[in-house]
Length: 361
Image (tube, rainbow, N blue to C red; front, side):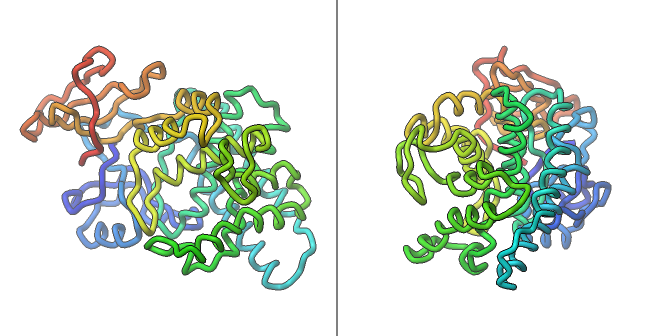
């Protein structure tokens, strides 16, 4: 299978991985043949890429960081937890809702187990979802990335659970932001931006009352928009004033947001998002965490269809952990766009004059 941009050229292609809705439920299942009407509707729903079957890439196995079952369960749990919190707020009931902490902790243990069992090396996020489900899928992806970094740092069970639970709920304050602002397609006005920034404080206030959610997990919601140089919000904290959990989640939050399609812009490619993180250096993020992140996240996910500087089209076959920007690729077309009858693999660590320049169909 391979990952390709959504376009009418995919008509008659067969879906290789499902498309999920905002609740983590399957909207379009694997094995479905794509029609023009279906592709148009998926584009309207904000889906920009799809995993499709391709005989030339049948042997490529795309391994998500967590299983499909774990991902769907996690998204559904985050969705229901946030909905429950909204209902609590609207009902003016300030009592603790202990089941939220328990349910989030339970589903996080499934994520953790999958990550520990994943021997594929670099973390690869391989879910496809509609843009209206961004908040819930984003929360799960940030938790996956943050937990992977926590494991790489050698965190123990208590620490890893605190960061994972906090990451799953880091954006819960967004449930209090009006939908017309949260999903606005254009730039925020100054007033809208000030309101949007309040989600960090609101999230902290909501979580610190919850049994089963530690105060450190609640502080992740509070601090995930703080930046190393003090340019973040809500308190303009600097350096060591920011808890390490929040530094990790804040960096993963930025990366995942950049690589996701939003109402107001298209998704950035993984390597473009990583370049932004690296460019932030010590100004925005902790440099040691940036380096750790770069070593553990797949810059070019397996299955991604790419264009080379030679104008040839290829698909990423496998990753080189030591050189993540130079994976093994399979050439599908020549420099004139002609389909190759016999695709072949090239290791970009050995072909130094060749490089990936863009995501391609």
